Length: 195
Image 1 (spheres, one colour):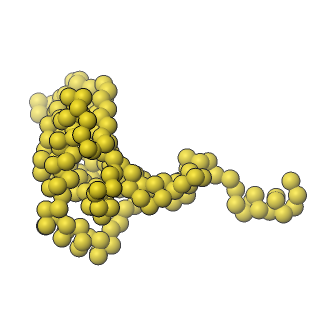
Image 2 (cartoon, rainbow, N blue to C red; image 1 turned 60 degrees about the vertical axis):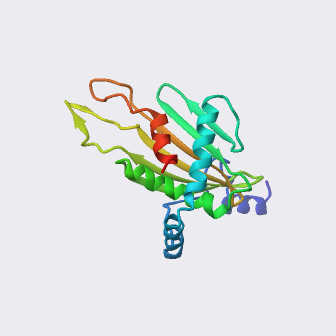
Image 3 (spheres, helix red, strand yellow; image 1 turned 135 degrees about the vertical axis):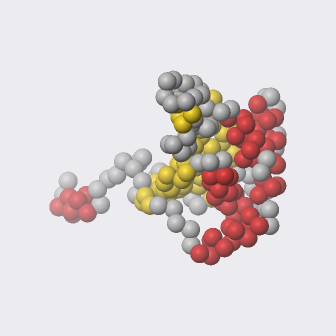
């Protein structure tokens, strides 16, 4: 390594591809908030909710619809990813992410944190926005905590500033002396998409 390369490597060290070069709290500007509330007031979310609702329940029956959707179930988590389609306006897809946050909060959840990460994947820039919502800690019945549907992670993924997909993940604790079993994930999806 020559002198110039040595200086440049110290000024611009190589980063791990998985490491975000920007990580910050999500803060919507006043104009973004006004536009979002107008979007909600106009009930623009209803079309997307209807499409996603039908697609989810068709996919559970192994029937494909016009919406690209993936469902994941495991012992301690359930998830659904809804992929962007060009017939959806970009702003609608973006606002729907915040709409899901508000809908989950209406179910009794508390927003614990929000973050935006931008990761340079060399071939593209990936932006991931996250909302992490938890069930109230004081929701105890008979000495055990009621975890509702589990802890909820909402993600919006964008590739080169273009929408890619939304993800809803419910992770939960196994039934024990400390926790009741979680409520049914399908019921939560029903409440979110039937809004």
